[in-house]
Amino acid sequence: MASTEVHHVPRCTCEGRKSVEDDLAEDSTRTCQARTEDASGLETTTTTTAVSRNYRPRGSLARVLFDKQKADERLEAYDKRQWYTVDTSKIRDDLLKLWVPLGAGPYRDQPDKAAEIFLMRSSERSDSLPLQAWHSLARSALSWFISRTSINGLLGRGSMHVFSCEQFEKLMEASGFKGPWGSLVDLGAGDGATTTHVAHLFERVYATDISPPMRWALSKRKFTVLDVEKWHEEAGPFDVILCLNLLDRCDRPNTLLRQFRTSLTPGGRLVVALVLPFSPYVEVGERGDHKPSEYLPVKGNGLEGQIAGLVDRVFAPLGLKCLAWSKLPYLCEGDLGQAYYFLDDVLFVLEAVPDVAYNYEEKNETSEKVRSQEGPV
Image 1 (tube, rainbow, N blue to C red):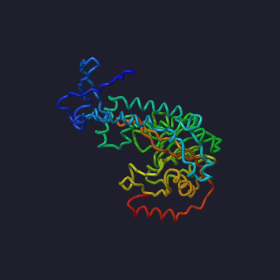
Image 2 (image 1 turned 120 degrees about the vertical axis):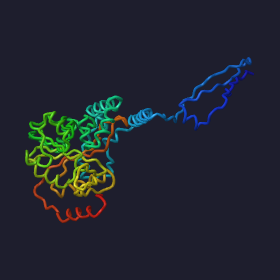
Image 3 (image 1 turned 45 degrees about the vertical axis):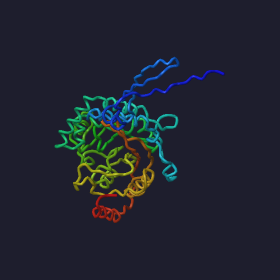
């Protein structure tokens, strides 16, 4: 009968060993000594070091960097296919025919080259400790005097990405736009990063923004900066109007949509991007409570449900017809919290249709309703 080899289990000989709770609070590692005996009876002492998996640093900076590492790991593991897809079972047939997938790859559900470059650049800036420390100190000091948007403009941070030139051209082609590519205006353009992707397609490029530092940044990019209130009087009509993530941030979205309709050239296109589910927040408005003065009647459950609500209850009554739509990630440059941030953006390509009977009575009723409530739904 063959002999059986016996594996002796090491016996811990540490004295005064701390509990797991104390160990996690005091240090990230635990060192133990254990003795084993081989077949000849020779005793051997072994020292082992165990790393606590639930370790959380105690220093302020160490905690920030530790939390950032964990957040970046979650971003890396996130299924980015969700950025470019929708639940088609929740979309009406007539709207599903207008759907334009804009992702890359064989299934058109992955970030394209422009998005990948933005994410890589954002991660590099987020990992720069001196840069992020400077931004943090400057924000703390400047927040007493100017808005967050203006701070970002002064510091050259918080850049956004919505679409690439190729994605924009696909949307315009799907909408049947044949040109001319004469004039473009981008309202609420920020630092002009997204505008720059498509500016070379047009002969004349205009832009607006409420923040003085952002207007300065737009001027540096050689765009003609228009007055935020009189943009439609100073230039136009326009072949293409961009309204990217502005309707949920402006004080009077209905007024703005009516201005869009009358500021387009015949056959022109209005491109609206909106974060869904809808959640308005006005940084600078008449009410002073960060809620819009005008009610935008966005109804429906979840992202897919609100798409139909926007087309039927917001765009159509104002004489704006949806020709194509898609979904993209609304990407924002990161900070010491994580490498980048994202929201679900739905893009609509609209055209102005001949005069329609707009139900002003319904609009006035909803406007009065919002004033009597705590805030817009």
